[in-house]
Length: 320
Ligand code: TXA
Ligand code: MG
Image (tube, rainbow, N blue to C red; front, side):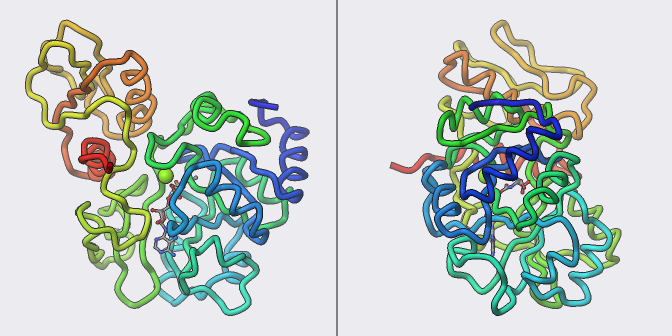
């Protein structure tokens, strides 16, 4: 069936497919999600199959409202405050799973916690409303590769493995949601993402704890494999010059001199623009067959933390 514009009729059709246990890719304000009915174990299993994803990696459950979130998870007072401030939006909370929550065990990979997000994209919201079920949705790319920020990226990665791709145009943030562990009294940053940590700290008036996973090496969040978001090309960070045969991923007003292929994530040095362009730029440079993508330094403040996290993982040594 492939890509269809996300009209009202297409969303109805997508909801019917989802209730039938099929997979539907849909836009969110961060990246495209590969959705399945979170109450249906066979549908959820099909996500792992389509992505080629290790089974131990739990999925984010997308819901339409706080009330729907509370059917699935316990929201401690602090979690409720965070949800109130940032939902709907590009933020995911890891919470304690309620006994009898209407989601299958495969979604949480057997954990007693569950990751919940209320997305803000109109197509995602309409789809959740039309389906009337919580939707498990990881990023709509093959496991370990670059996330999809456009419908055609999903088609290139997943092809027939997905019943329908709802096209809502390029995603606004271009980088995945920020993930916080909000199971206790301390809030821990598990994955830097579209909401900068500083913004959350300012809203809450308390500092976020950092998990070892945030510094890349040892995943506390099971899916935080070090090598991730990897293009086929090698990725060389902190490039202050380029070498023959390299493609350049530049940033800012003064890109390093480069004779070959170059994409500037943001010529004006705007981190929001850079995040929105990141995955499409990596895909485009990779498609040229360059052996190495050299990446200019990007400031580590605000959204730069999430951008650098993704780039470090793209540059990390690959598994066997
Ligand atoms: O922006 C996003 O978050 C996108 C859109 C589609 O919503 N989704 C996304 O999903 O990035 P995914 O599956 O690619 O990443 C989800 C991350 C994984 O690293 C996973 O390990 C972590 O969330 N996660 C899920 N459930 C968890 C849990 N109960 N405890 C700790 N980490 C969890
Ligand atoms: Mg992903």
